[in-house]
Length: 182
Image 1 (cartoon, one colour):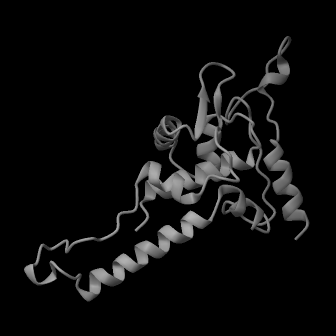
Image 2: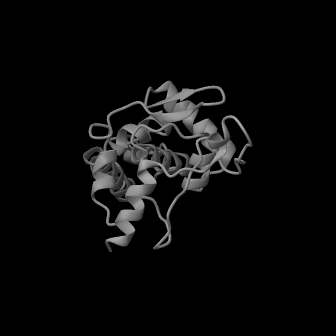
């Protein structure tokens, strides 16, 4: 019902919503969401064309949320990537099911309708607010550290030495507080 790509997009959007406007590299997003790096870039491009995320190129580049997480529903995200399609006519093209779907396809259509309704009622922010701990699956007690330059960033000597240090985003700090409060 829900494609893997759509589920990847939901993970990415939740992670960006938790970043509170911070720009994150595609590598950092891929690592945190467990989405393959090349695929993360592809999904971010689709979300960018839909004006849900904004990307900036260059050394200080990255991606950030470009929509209101309080208004953007999970269905909005899914529809950008792989819209859920209701079953209107018999997929088998059977003459006896032209006026009415068979019991199997009737039930499948009901499930799709329920999924659409449920995803349409949930916003990115409601997913974040409705969790006790991290919104994305993380082992208990895990804190997420990200670097503005991505995973594997190294410390430089001299001028600009702090640029390569790993830093915790606001979202990682919130996650740490949530895990401790359990």
